Length: 280
Image 1 (cartoon, one colour):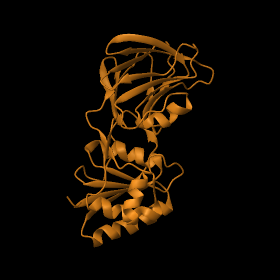
Image 2 (image 1 turned 90 degrees about the horizontal axis):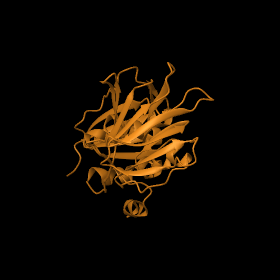
Image 3 (image 1 turned 120 degrees about the horizontal axis):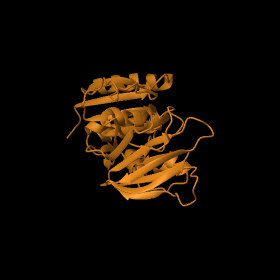
């Protein structure tokens, strides 16, 4: 079915992305397609509030992202979780997720509005933070959730359970809980495995573990991960979502991570078949 509405999300404080967004907006209007446009601010603090504001409605048929991987991750948190397929166009520094080059934008867009593009479904993580039994934060991400220390010389102890069965205590600088999509991000830098992005698994990867036996673990996405910080200190560690949004985590807080009920829908990028179609 041809598209009737589309959203455009472009990189924050990036003039080339803003200019291209305006051009694309006018192009869609000439095609008679309703268009919504929004600048993406990718970094920030939750400050106790776990929902980001949103200009683009949940009902758009597609979302075009103009920027880098960080912009696409922000878009996934905002609108991808509502089922709107995302097309990433690389105007940033990294293009693992935003693999469509600018010069191919309009041929690919033509395919998109005519329903000729393949869509992949990818697992997302839902994270809840409980403090004294009360949910104080809830967030969904496409790449990863990371627990990281603040103090330079300090090691943190994290008790990890899977489906309420104790797994181990990670003594490390932190812990990465990654989706297959996020396996090529921080997880890879920390020595974790690369997974095919449509696999339905999670990865637990300790950051600089104190014990040699603490190695990355792959678990099925049906698992519920429960994490508690053991260090009795008033100092917080940082819980980050997709490396962009931070939340302070304290002793005895409980982090519960599971597969989100929603999947992110994205256009596969850097595929020779896609480019062959746009050249015909």
